[in-house]
Length: 360
Image (tube, rainbow, N blue to C red):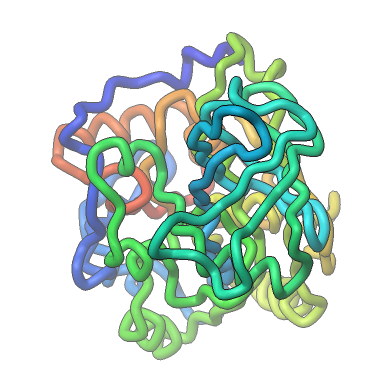
């Protein structure tokens, strides 16, 4: 499909720079098949679900993936910024660096600055490989938990560029940019639909008879990137590591067998569930990378309802929700949201999408 079909105009003042307080007070737009739209708030969610439904959340935890340092070993030592985007093994990460033109294969970058140096000393990394678009492979001098500790000490959470470009990230973001479910470290971006949950909302869902299940997908920085290709078939999707336990798979399959619906919290949960589902719709245990790219025409096998934020134009995420609920339905929903003052993107409001019968 043509990428420009997924474009729309968004006023700059619709981009949320801080989350709602409390989190479940964010607005919620319910989108039923046929573009039936209903305005509410996230705390209304239990009213739209029924006993036996199963919510699936992503329990990944955002790491302090943004590092600042300098190139060493040459006459000049330019400043280098690196955002870790994918762990390769115990000591190597793929990273997006700026300015990429200052680095070549074999260069060493020393991360750390005066006043904030990790207890183990400076953190050095060699540029092992350099690809396109500023992506390099960094081989760090530390390994395993020692490296994780150094990154946590020296790094900072990487806010999305559409927030970081408008204000300076601060200590409040360290708390705001984690979901209440975050336990498994490895993401470089938050599964933002989960940011709307509070203990009170979880309790209300359980009282309603709705189950809550945890899976893990370590979100990569590619989730922020617009599709630059003119046609969606030419876009290369980033891969992310995820896992679904046998226990969770069994719970979801059993619930669906009794008429319960699967409610994915966020596009990350949906992508992982769809990756693990067989042709028969049954969800299998899963531990692997996934690079599933969902566009209109995809046959959904695992997910019936999707809670998600409002996404960037021309993004893989807007393509996904258009596949789920129908492109024209989502265009009408987004037009209503913009006109009605909904807040967009990671810290913004949410929508509850019911799968279109035409997209089954």
